Image 1: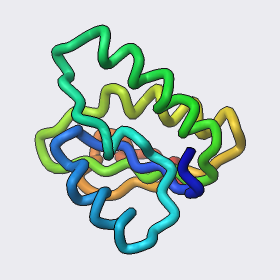
Image 2: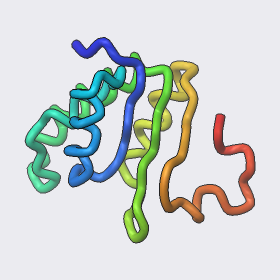
Image 3: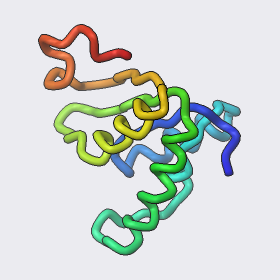
Image 4: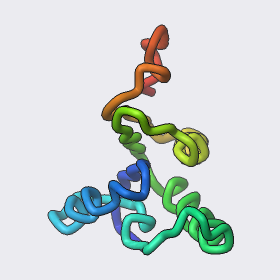
Length: 107
């Protein structure tokens, strides 16, 4: 179990950035950043999703990180898990499709 309360969702390729933050002492609660995940392995991802949802349920803050050209997929599930537990959502990066015309997305 991680002691943190911040969950970060992004593409798997960004995990090294979040591991570095965890190593620096940030209170992260996203165990996926320490997993060697293969998005093509459905069995592995199914098991990982169970842990990720548990992490989200314990988190108070969700940071959604997305770079230009990336699609938000699994992050939508994580948003629901954090919001369902009364957490707050923050967007970081390229998200014009999420914020255009929606000034109230930061909850």
